[in-house]
Amino acid sequence: MPEKPRVILAPHPRTVARVFASADLARLSAMAEVVWGQDEPMPQAAFEEALPEAVAIVHGGWTFGGEEVLRRAGRLRAIMEVMGGHGKPGFPYDYCFAHQIRVLSCSPAFGQQVAELALALALAGARDVASADRVFRAGTETYQMAGNQGTFLLRDKPVGIVGLGAIARALLPLLAPFHCQVLAYDPWLPDNMIRGAGCEPLPLEDLLARARVIFVLAVPTSENRALIGRERLALIQRDAVFVLMSRAHLVDFDALTECVLEGRFRAAIDVFPREPLPLDHPIRRAEGAILSAHRAGSVEEGHQEIGRMVTDDLGLILRGLPPRLMLRAEPELVARTALRR
Image 1 (cartoon, rainbow, N blue to C red):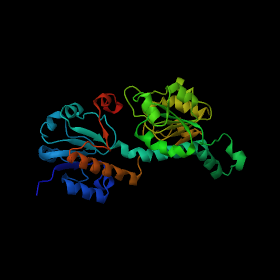
Image 2 (spheres, rainbow, N blue to C red; image 1 turned 30 degrees about the vertical axis):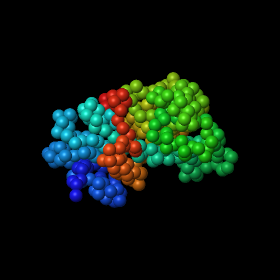
Image 3 (cartoon, one colour; image 1 turned 120 degrees about the vertical axis):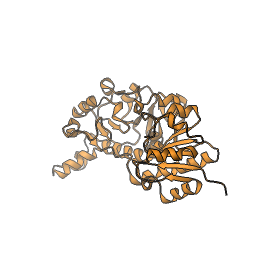
Image 4 (tube, rainbow, N blue to C red; image 1 turned 90 degrees about the vertical axis):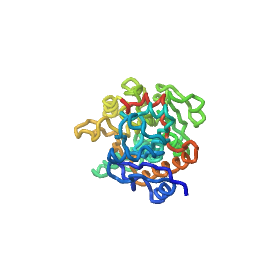
């Protein structure tokens, strides 16, 4: 019986059970010799001992050194991370690109989780759900039409998406029943690809001015820090809903806070410049803000999608086929991501 290919499984700080359903872990063990497979950090000595025969490494945070270590990995074909996102500092991307080692991220596994909360926050903003709840608990509620001042239906409204990546692709089917006109801005995609996704490509300024609901879903890069600054925030129409889901990096957060405090538009926010957010931050007292503590991608059942993706893609790689589910690191993009800096 031929020897199984070796896979190093070191998911810390995630746990094995958090990432892999029992069925997927059984599939992984059937196709490969799993080394380590524990919840604690893998010791460097154990990693280096297992490395020469490893065909894949599944990790939760790269702590194993640079190319001087990977030079010992004569059989390595893939490095698969289970935290989400490319561009981490200290990772030997250049060596991997030069030696045909695929570097794969589990970030697409979070698309459905984030998209569902993004839609929930957009609906809550459009119907002013959080404010209605607060006044009801205080005993100062108003009923029916009087309690709906400034609210609107999502159906048939122009919706803007900033960043047409994995989260947006998960969001688009959720928006379909609302028959929204979807506007999109993504400078990394050609207009024809944006149209192929059913969206109208627009410059960012036009999108901000036209959309009644704006979803900020782009990954942070070296080029988009404070992309939506004070002047662009001023373009957003009054009574729009601004949904910030990817990173606060993309927005001038002080200016956003001022706009919401002034009542220019409502905002639903899941990510902040500092986390935990300081208790005295003024956004906490903004009546027009719905605040969520970076919860979008942290649904427990959603994490096991990571294990399914890892196992499925590893099965393809071991058969000499390209991975299809995880996000491949691209040399042109990794160098531009903000996480690497």
